[in-house]
Amino acid sequence: DADVTQTPRNRITKTGKRIMLECSQTKGHDRMYWYRQDPGLGLRLIYYSFDVKDINKGEISDGYSVSRQAQAKFSLSLESAIPNQTALYFCATSDGFDDREGNEQFFGPGTRLTVL
Amino acid sequence: GENVEQHPSTLSVQEGDSAVIKCTYSDSASNYFPWYKQELGKRPQLIIDIRSNVGEKKDQRIAVTLNKTAKHFSLHITETQPEDSAVYFCAASITGGGADGLTFGKGTHLIIQP
Image (cartoon, each protein chain N blue to C red):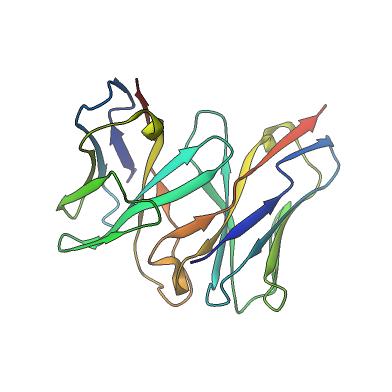
């Protein structure tokens, strides 16, 4: 089955370290998204991309950067991790088929990141 | 930008009873309103969505209603079952269609009491 995958699934790192979270998809979707989930806060959009040349900031992009290496791959980087970036990170994709009416977003399994 | 408020944060109902979760949004340009269910340790999964040209949508025991004038939408689950226990998130498109991402509510923890 076509799916969205994320690596690593869990990661513990130290303050100041650089870390990369990776997302891959076999759904053939053009659009990819990174969200962050914190307890009691829901999911918040970090970055999104329509294709390899189109990267856009979301609501909470400060302290993060992204790279769209190919249609199927979208990476999230923390250049210098800090403790308040401890969270559950989700990648999502959508096909952009119905921009006027709305497109379902499909989520990956998540990466649990802890910054000590 | 868009802001989505969701209530209640926790909802406990007896098995077999109905559950209702309510959300309000701020941006009248939003036109896509999905609901996601997240079981413990799992990814969010779409359970139902509604678009602004529709007032109500049903799928078996689940229904969603939308009032564009009042800018609120609600999830209704009837004949609740133990497997309905989860966290439910409402969301609204940041721009029309959701291409620029979704703004989520903070979630409702639904507990089904046996």
